[in-house]
Amino acid sequence: MADQLWRIEVDRTTCLGSGMCTGLAPNHFTLVEGRSSPLTDLVPPDDLLIDAAESCPIEAILIREEESGAILAPEQ
Image (cartoon, rainbow, N blue to C red; front, side, top):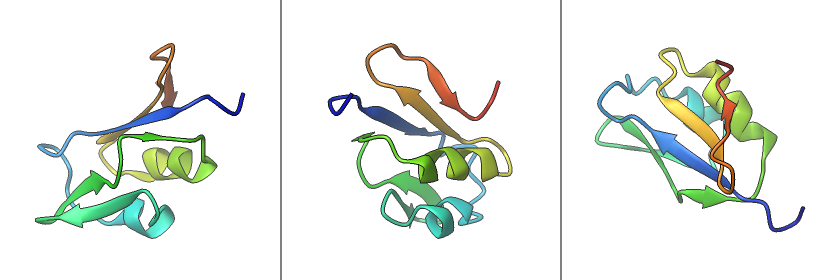
């Protein structure tokens, strides 16, 4: 499924700015005004995104399959 894309969503109102996501997946996240922000919303699948979402201390990151909307991380 080379055409499959994942959507990165960050709840910037609850983000603590711990930087876990930028440390784990620097090609996908940056800190803007002390809060996490995805570099782009739609990306090819990357296991580092799952790690970043699972490592977020307050689960402010959500990774979804773009086509179905299914939540891939964090585990519900």
